Amino acid sequence: MNSHFTNWETFFKQENKLDYARNLHAFLDEEYAKHTVYPPRNLLFNAFKLTPLEQVKVIIIGQDPYHEPGQAMGLSFSVPKGVPSPMSLINIYKEIEQDLQVTMNYELGDLTSWARQGVLLLNTYLSVRRSDALSHRHPGYDQFFEHVLHLLNEIDRPLVFMLWGAFARKYKRVLNNSQHLILESVHPSPLAANRGGWFGNKHFSKANAFLKSQGLEQITWQNNIG
Image 1 (tube, rainbow, N blue to C red):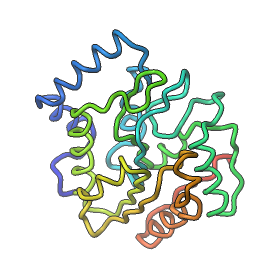
Image 2 (image 1 turned 60 degrees about the vertical axis):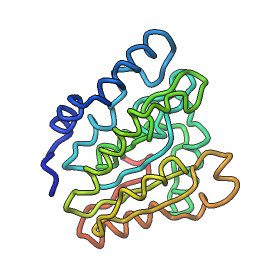
Image 3 (image 1 turned 90 degrees about the vertical axis):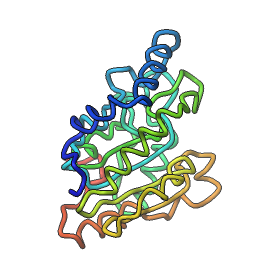
Image 4 (image 1 turned 45 degrees about the vertical axis):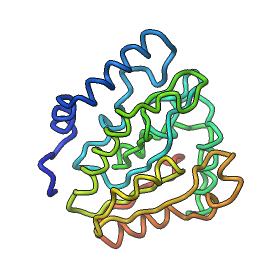
């Protein structure tokens, strides 16, 4: 790893010294105090807690968290056990089934098993007001996310980046390390996916083929085994 950061803890410690981070924290303090915001504050950085930097293999980037009660859990596209799978996740599962010829459990929307295998499940914005998509488009998040991607881009081992939707794809400019595989697609939300470009993108088989070619363990995307 060329970067001087070897874990998320040292990265966050450094970021929190910067002006943008202080501004972002102040914004979040006010938002969580005055509004219903998802995910719960303690799960805001859940993706980083569940997937240590040294274990990251695949980075999935979405837009912003689910904005209805009980859904967001700090992992992009994931919902807690017992919560019905949103349509974006259903479309992800449909593509996995077509791509890998497996059967997914649509009643299990918790993607923690992916996170523990090295899939970093990120949104470009980590929080949102209830029922108000993209309400936390704060410049602090833009800067934070760019810094996260710069760090990941510099890692001196092969990674797979899946950029889903316009908010994710705009960050392709940051990713210039030839060791990494960059996969792009429209967002899996019904509005975007049904216009074409989501189904048949084969991101999951492409990611596993790349990992295998690099001598790395593949991701078990199927969620109804074990």
